[in-house]
Amino acid sequence: MPDDRKLTNFLGEKLSPLLMPFDPEAIVIGGGVMEHRRFLHRLQAAFKARGMKAKIRRATLRKNAVAVGAALLF
Image (cartoon, rainbow, N blue to C red):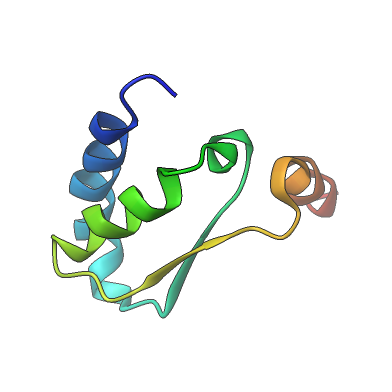
């Protein structure tokens, strides 16, 4: 992934203020982006640097998470 540090820092910066009021135990992320080796660790660090205690978890459905979620809407 080209320059995933910029992406993880951006996500940490933009999402942490939205999620902090809910004080989640975990944040589950799926899709192809999670296939990149260091993405999970760097995203966790970006949230932690902004005071988030939630653990970042990989969705068990991986690349199929979006399709399954969409199918459940119908």
